[in-house]
Image 1 (cartoon, rainbow, N blue to C red):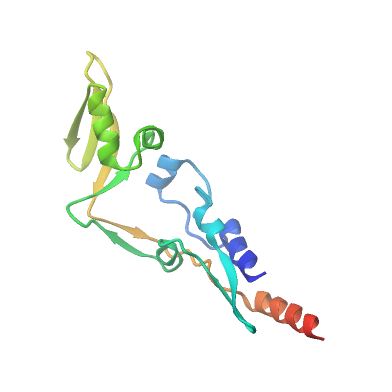
Image 2 (tube, rainbow, N blue to C red):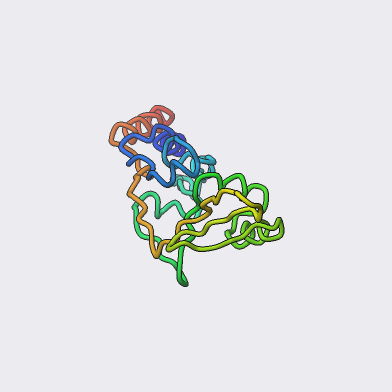
Amino acid sequence: MAADMIRSHIYRGEGFDPLAPATAEYRGQGQPLQDTSTLRDSIASEMTAADTVSVGTTVRYAPLHNSGGTIRAKKNWLFIPASGVRTLERRFGKSPSKVIAALKGMDYSIYRVGRTVCCRENEKGAKPQTLYYLKNSVEIPKREFFYLSASEAETIFKELTDDII
């Protein structure tokens, strides 16, 4: 019951900051934390003792999304995918190096303009396409979902006491 309540917080998305413009452009409009449903579907409960239930997730990025924070590049840059790159990632692999290698193998030119990685077919008049925006860090807004409201806790307590009586 508690896991269902927490999953519903993600589903409803109430109080969540909207998607950043670059994120909306990359994946399309929608609600935050609902792109693949991996996070929502990972919320599970387990009875750890006769009188204790634990609710949690094994998704490693859950705390960052719940509390917010900063993602910093380990080396030089974070590669933030531009619009249209999702299709390339599904075809060639999720990492920028796989996408770029595949495009080079298809005779595309890969080049940088400032903090932008672009590609263009090696044909006369071919239009360039932005692949990635390079950033040192990105801010993930707090989107708190892992909690029980007072009314939810009361509902669970009532359910438990009704079962005992």
